[in-house]
Length: 445
View 1 (cartoon, one colour):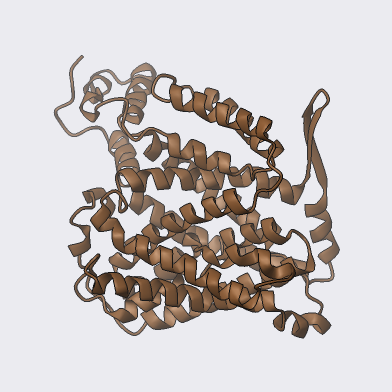
View 2 (tube, helix red, strand yellow):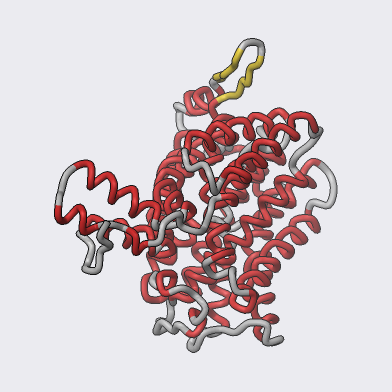
């Protein structure tokens, strides 16, 4: 078999360009998905407060069930979206965490120090602000709500800012959001799971263990889908949020390609173009990139453009009668979420970043002033998707949950406006001094 030593055919180049530049692909999709997410949330708000609001709430309260024999899982449509569809979202999150930890911004401790420290500040300070306002009572469980950053909407805002947002800001916020996601996953697993059934948990752990043992020898995707379903059922019945199955399986995906890229036999297709050779070369090209990058490239559009907007449509619909609007604005939970996201994120991210720079743990690129750091902190206050997700876990459909959702929506809007206003005045020439440890593919954003 002759190995190619000339430029590969256009379709092979297309595959490689799409998969080997995963960070660029990820950021562009996130920017577009953020706009779609905002549209879906707006539709939900208008629908839930329109004369047809009953149809909105009736739709998502409709029950559906699956079962085998006497075993049955019955959930309403909103719960199926939050518990099942969001598995894909968290699976892609797991893939991105795995890639960033092994090949991206977070793989080098020195390179990762700044966003990790910033993310810690962006989680701890908002939680403390919320707790200081809601230390007791029905709202006390919501301290995890203002800890999250919604990278999709953040990237949408940055895309609208264009050259006013330096490339460093995108990389910094992406790495920060990944650490944020890890923190949110731990919070959900530890603090928002109750009454654990250890028999079912053992089944879920067993499914993960089998997948881990087989990941380098069995490549058939159906095998892992079955194990994923078993893990999801085990976690659901164990009373641990089943979306964590997505994170677990995403983190297990191999980062080493099964085939060296030099073994793609493009010459054979060029010499004898037919369906058999086309399929063969396509399979070889797919095996020349890691499973993490391939799955992220294939699944991220479904997560960003389908799952997350549907989640927003199902969860952002808040009905607040005009005569109770003032009451919502005086609710301590609403203000705990707003101040946690808007003030806590801004102060936590920017202060911890500047402290890290002052201690020489990390450094800022040339031309990036404290104003950009504070702007990044403010944008970090856009919580939305994960914040609404934690709200559902903490409060469900109770009135306090409505107050928290209102806080998330208002805080995310305020954070986007404040962050944009801080970044709009200037323009920074891209500086790649922070990219010295980042692969070439990851510096193109």
